[in-house]
Amino acid sequence: MNETSKKGINLFSPTIIDEYAGKETILKFLDGNCLTTYFQPIVFSNNSTVYGYEALTRIRGENIFGGIGGLFQMAIKIGMISSLDVRCRENAISLASGFGLGRDAKHLFINVCPETLMDTAHRTGITDELAEKWQIPKKNIVLEITEESSIHNYDLFMNSITYYRKKGYTIAIDDFGAGFGGLKMLSIIEPDFVKIDRHFISFIDRISVKKNLVDSIVYACRRMGIGVIAEGIEREEEFKELENLGVELFQGYYISKPQPVIGEKNRVQ
Image (cartoon, rainbow, N blue to C red; front, side, top):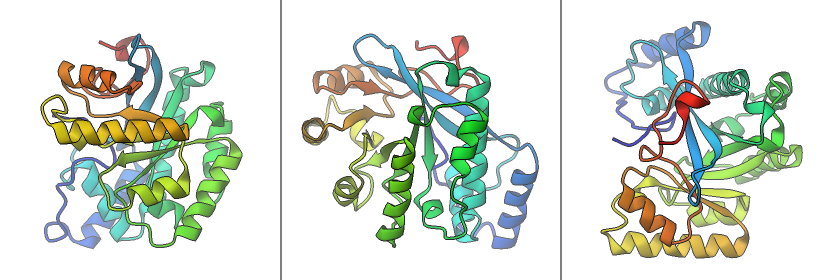
């Protein structure tokens, strides 16, 4: 089973949960202590040194949405995505700081919903305040923008990306290849990293078309000075195949499962 994050497995169906129940549950999550963060390491291929950790939202107790992806889909539907996204960001930064992440050079990867960036009600500077409060350098925070989300206002979206980049944050495209606008987003954002969607990673050692596509992505990104991260690695054969293709950063259950801590208990296997 591959790792899931806040944009992970989607078992949500609008026919099962009505908007009122969804809103009441999300308000409970925001007001209570129902949301937490797990951390999964991202490592260099050559020596398994940890480059950073991705922050993955988890729910304490019952989740009526069936999965983290369902929670966020409902939040988008009822107009609460900005509040939920910011709470998850705050949890990630504060917990990572408590585990000492701000005192070393390791990076914190945080998922940011494009819908939040395009929300005119979203207050500018919240991430800056959190980074400064919890003493994590902005240059060590990587904002992951998922490619799967639909972007309807590229001007507003790019204004947000430009703001974060000027502030010193690092930008990554998550789930690269999963959506329909991958190349367009790549050309517009010009990210520091792309994280190749696990669809292309799974059994890459056995499926030649996946190998050829990943090889092309690595080649193109190398020429543009963009780092490549392979996520969702679950098998040694996948790891070795990706290493042969020149991928330098790896993430997945084969390396380590997400853990509620950073440090010795979240070490690479």
